Image 1 (tube, rainbow, N blue to C red):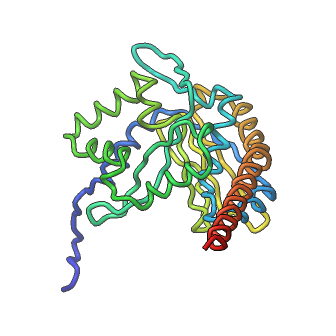
Image 2: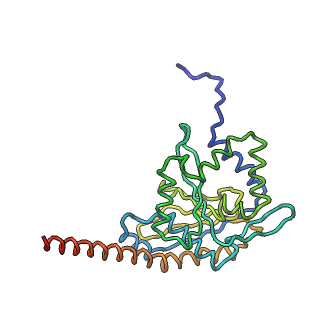
Image 3: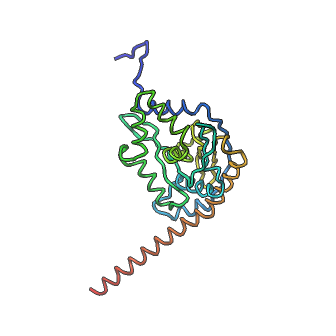
Length: 272
């Protein structure tokens, strides 16, 4: 059947409702972008030792969380009402953006990882895989957003407005102290994403030698350019140092455990 030459209206799906609502609440946030070229040779070498591979999102998320211990602005958010003030969360909350199919449509959903700075890279990677692979309605963060978009328009706007404007603690717990996503696996960079939160971390394609462009988009009300620049410098150092060491030690521990299991199996066999 030929397409109607007059065009047609389409149903606004839950995924599009969610994005539209987020954009409405993002319009008044003064966002600034900083960018740095990371060189991560130590990370690349250590990552090859770990099986299964550590997620790049996990590496960047933990590096940002560790940097947040030294730079408290990374855990700040601007709360507008009943008067303008700054709220500091006691730990980082990483909101991971993933694309999932829901009701026949690929849509963007978010769920958070609490305190990535105190969580192992293996556990963060497992969280991310769960966000990517588990049934959509089994992930609490996804379920919250889906329930939100099911509300009538005014109630939906009111709920998001209350979370974002009145309560720093619940805002940080529900929506994260920072957001992370990447289109690098498509060979694409995100340049200036818009969001209503304090910080958005994104990175592009990663070359074979570990060179990658990293961008931090931040709310100028709670952070200055020097804070953001220092954060990116700190993250590169943390990744090539602390996180590379963590992966090497995890690989060594796994190898030692496998050797111990083989020795035990051999000893049991000799008894027989």
